[in-house]
Image (cartoon, rainbow, N blue to C red; front, side, top):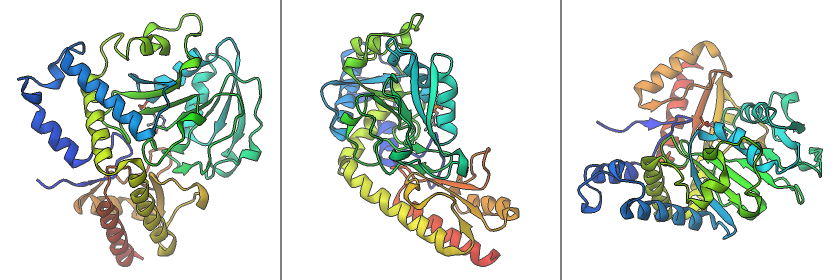
Length: 360
Ligand SMILES: *Cc1c(COP(=O)(O)O)cnc(C)c1O
């Protein structure tokens, strides 16, 4: 059966070449006579898989040596709690920028642990833009500043990295990590759930500056202590071994594509042509400020929302899947992560054109 074009926000499309490789190794990895899923995480074989994945990620993002890379579980949502537990370090207040649903969830969770100071919010315009640096009312005594560089649901992406001075910057890169080059040294901590732009669900990558570790709040569960994870190479307990392996295959694939810089060029082209078509169509619309339009998640509405159901069923028939917008906002959303090819975007635009001409 032919593979469909999958525009799911997450768990999202994976590169076909990666799935083929995993499939060829499913029963018998490297002639060892067993599947990666069946390996002890302490075996030499598995440790070699884990280490290669970490090294490839370090290479892809040029992660400096004073940063630890952790392969954790619990999704990005568990990080909403782990971040204050690990990074408050004796302080009782943290700054948060609110740009939509994922920032709001992070804020809500952090409030269990500290005073949350919302230093800027785009709620005034229905979360359709990212606040400017000059709008951030930062507190120099905050333990850290948290923001969401790409809001997966609203399709809003920051076009700059906030300058927070000496206060560590913490970023939820779940839906845009590895989509373009990133100066990791500007951050105290970067985290990303795997199921958007990395690999299968069950894994969350945390990249954290070493000097921030080791001062957790009382009662922090051992499995949620970054220092314990770092000291044990993310194997204090059993990690999500198969997801980690698959993420490694994706990192390897990214290197073969020419790395993050090469992906960024394709991603920019994909997003640009889709937004350009939407803007010129007279039939579809995207509400986000032009400078803050996400390169990964493209929400759009039809001129007449009564046509939504027809659009989705015809798209399904044409092999274009998972275009329904988030249940909280309605309309459509096309997620066009690294693994979604330019031809998938071309096919989507062709379908949208055809649909508009028949229903306009
Ligand atoms: C998907 C997503 C999350 C939640 O991830 P889980 O792994 O389901 O916890 C958090 N933040 C952002 C930006 C996301 O896109």
